[in-house]
Length: 247
Image (cartoon, rainbow, N blue to C red; front, side):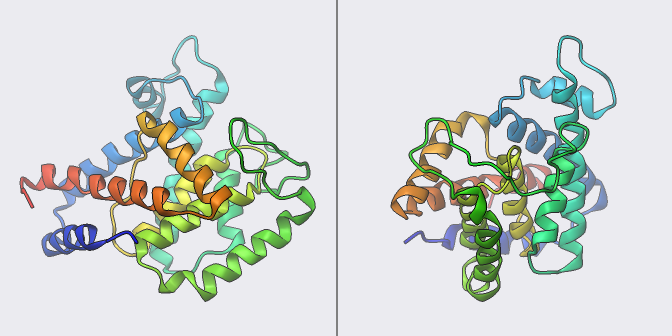
């Protein structure tokens, strides 16, 4: 089993500094939105660099890049803002929340499928796991929400966030954008419990995909939980830098 003592201690240290000065919160948030948007999109194949992503977030078009790539950046930022709003509501996860996040991800890209469960079967390239038949997506998602209501709340927040991510992806309920949506859902769960949102770096894409496939095909969540725990630990780094502390 994964030991969450390290992240618990890091969170206790961060809590001791709360509430943080507004200027630090603002600076951290701007940096987070940029890194989260860049890495999450890059994992899915978006070719905009970190600096180009920053330019797009500032409202400037980058030459030689597709409109889809621009919309992926703008949409992801809007989805982050939406998730932050959900955190303030202190509500349990619902299908409406999930569909709403997904709808924002596909806005102006594929409005016909935005917020709608897939109607066709899919194969994940390079993965051993085969997602459920399209006919079962609705019932699988209902089962996912029931699991969340009945069992997820008893898990450590980091494990709950990781399981929400992994189990959502296992169902593969949407035709496109499920990766970005799953990472937003993971951070929604972390933020509910006062943890900093995490950024899964694109450099860890292979390890990330392999850990997910292991969870889906062997029902072995250990590698994925370990990866997410490490990413959560790293998520505290910008706070220590901004606060000038060495926990």
